Image 1: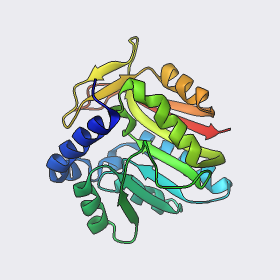
Image 2: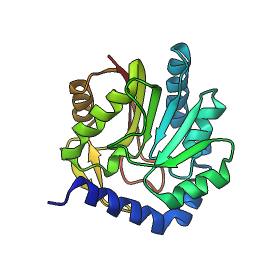
Image 3: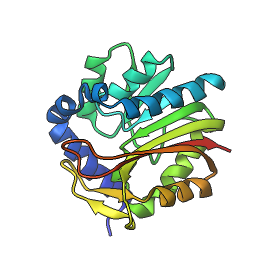
Length: 212
């Protein structure tokens, strides 16, 4: 079995190679997704009601979610494995901060963030790696901080491999993902599932969680 570093290297290389097409594909996608915007707005409102500290967009890609959150009044920084996507993010949104890094070893100290968004980035985590990711999210979040995770949802099936255009991914039952988060010290605030729109092949799940 490959190590987590090997899997991360494969994911980074795949997104580097696909970066220009990926950036073009996702640009403007939120305009047609009112339920997704509503979940992001709810996350932002919860964070603003807290201490209002820094929010990290993990797996930020070309930066569109970080930019949307900044437009909702949050202080946002973006992190992604792919240096090529980080270059695009910096060029597209020069007023925001972006850096290359991995979700399994975040560059922030303990209890320093007010919120984390993982927008379809945990989909690439091997199932056995997921508890470590949640533990790392919990480490950098302040008590009472919020985590919003968006993912491919498995319906009436276990965790299942998903044919992704860029690199291997997985679909997760929402209850199973929520249970792993609970074991890592998170309490569920709410969830939203939406049916696939044209061009999507599976239901989309969203979990809003709070660090205990």
